[in-house]
Image (tube, protein in one colour):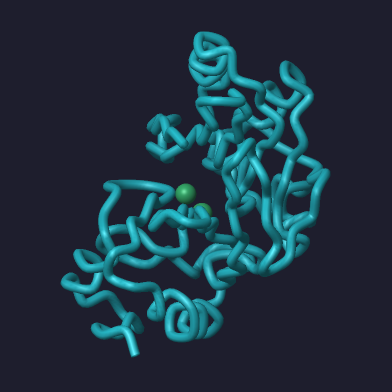
Length: 213
Ligand SMILES: [Zn+2]
Ligand SMILES: [Zn+2]
């Protein structure tokens, strides 16, 4: 399994292309912008982009979806609670932030515990609401890697003041789910640096317990 990281768009969103170097099957997580740059990489490696996976509906994570979907015919995966926001430029913020309407329709609707197969790679869906109602993290099975979108970063939690956000719900997500992740998990967040859970715990982020119970 290989991971290529791209920092895209004005909000410096981390977009990840995860691929199986044997079968060349690939998925892209949060193609926020710069579709042509992403496509250039996909084509240079001859990757088969079967799936576009969205951690949540915010416009800085979905700006290149339409162009990539059109070019590669990929399936769009999102949590079932994100459908409305993806389809509504007011909720996903595109009309405010970019003055460009972005509306996306999900093809494959996910629930907690679903597994997305990309070649020999299995990505397990963890529903982590709070930043948005259907935000997800993706855990790579048999590897200590979790893609976290805007649920948790290397030094902070995602904001909860945007449409659909809830401090109370995020607190539950962090307490009941994220706090249970072991120290050796490597977090690939939606913005900022990649880091280990050990490092994240050292930064004393709100609601995140310092020890795995
Ligand atoms: Zn967000
Ligand atoms: Zn974001």
